[in-house]
Image (cartoon, rainbow, N blue to C red; front, side):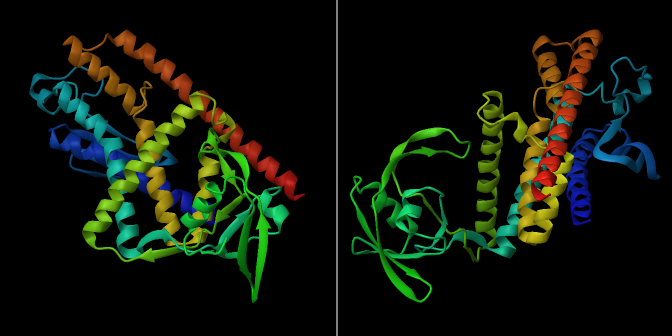
Length: 362
């Protein structure tokens, strides 16, 4: 139940923000908005205010803003052309379309600002505390365990994880004498670092160095930040996650990241539920990350997505006239087919993941 509630809450907010971007920029440029809908399909709740019908629809995986004069072949009376989407300049239409993804990215900055200003800026606790010993590693064979606190290496006092990394890296493969605290006991353990491959976040080999096979504790400390500091770090966090998202997309096409890792609505709901149970800060971070993903994915140059519309408008700006109606319709059919195939694939991944979890638990 937590997964369903958190999924509806998070996705509903992100869809609202996205469509609000389109809506506000349409209003800014004088376009008449006919419908603002959260969801697709049958209308569950509907209320008209002015020219616009505001509604919540049955299928929650999306939303739309319907504008007057949206279809190029639509007959528009001369007196109504001033409020028609099609009759706005190409750059005004570009701004209206781009505003949806842009609002998702801006919203991510706002969410991270909330996190950092009210929850504090997270940082690792500086210590030699071991979080995880890799199975079969040098460290495990030497007798190191999860939760051991490294006090010194070769008589050099340890107070930060960087000191541990440097000592292991610079060991030259020589035996190290490691003093640890385990509970109430102080022990000395000898271990010889081995040359091993270092992998990045995507599992790619990025070089070799001497390693023990230990990782730092994920214990965090939260530092108070001012309003301006929180804004600065919110922008940095958003930028870093944009780069990470784009890199991840590239790695999928390069087959570095397996396509089986792609998740759909079921996976999103599962993760949302986990973050809900983990606490408000974790849920906010997940919301910010998902908002960035939604913004970036909508900018992909696929017809029927915002990015596809932006490509059409860019071509129109260069040519001085829009693409032909048949060309646009053909491209949109391809886009619908691509998106439909992707949805089927991610649903298959979600169901296959659930089946594997059920079999492992049984």
